[in-house]
Length: 497
Image (cartoon, rainbow, N blue to C red):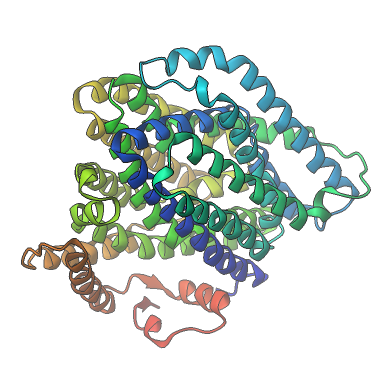
């Protein structure tokens, strides 16, 4: 497959490199915070950050996805697009102020248990939410124009500043100082995005029809809210709400961080770029759009499934080595989340939402998310009081799996894209064999040595098996070549004609 405008693939690569670096710094920051605050303090902080995220979600208005879909279709920055961008930014700020004004009283009842108060951190939380809500919008102005290098550079600088500040604080870390450091890092990021995207919002502006953009964003807004209850923050919020102890929320947050790191390190480059590219093809080239969808699904599965399988094998050692022995209880939670994520790849994950949004099926995405969120919330209420963090992992995993199943079915029925079950089966099968081989290794007391030895055996076995099962297709090789400029010879041997 010869990808139209190779800058799409190159943008994905730059986006990936930058975002991986950014998230790596963020992950190291979470480790420093968890070790510094301990299990109980980290759980309390996780609950507070879930509150911040709830405020952001309730005021999001679907602004990011609207920009990501419409800007690639209207050409370069001009007076009309500046008018649109300014209106969307004002809308986001106004909604955030309104949500904060109305929501404080309601949130008082959610976080009213002893020792979990949020009032003492109110000012820091409100400003942090405002900045974290603005950063993705300004960053999307760059991603939607495929200027991902600039966006990633700003993110890396902000996360690097946060990490250095956390390390400098050392043993003096507490919840207030952590929130202040995160606030300063978000301010750096917003300022950097404002400067890098100046052409998109500064200069002459001329009115344009914004109602369709607002309507699209408003519809997707509902999906953003349901995604909150399908993701990490919603799970942490229910753990904080339903249990008197913050420790389960802390263990769950630690386990989810490891999963998210494994996924983002390998797939974050597709974020934003995938939707922008699919939106371009959706206008007049549906066959190429379907091919791109299939390529992204197969490559993403090849990248993620073996990594998630390796984490299942090494879950106890990972928790002990990264976060210390006091977080060892997160291993079971980690394995449950990983198992659901591997199964979900059978139906595609974020690619489904990108595809449906690109063809304008926003209400389909909303309905799927709402149904899955209802199931998740019901299971949370039933399982968390009995099973704690394990119950949250089972409930969240079931909701994510249901959303992906329904999303995959919608893509196949409405868009005509093919189900990539064969590639999933070959990749998952090789992962299972590699995992079983790794379990034959003798027990090693040192977590770091155990992780390294398991990684060597696991990935050596998996790579050898890929030459047998051949999980890639010829179109995948064309996409990789477009992104990298050349094609490593071994990849030709693991692709089918």
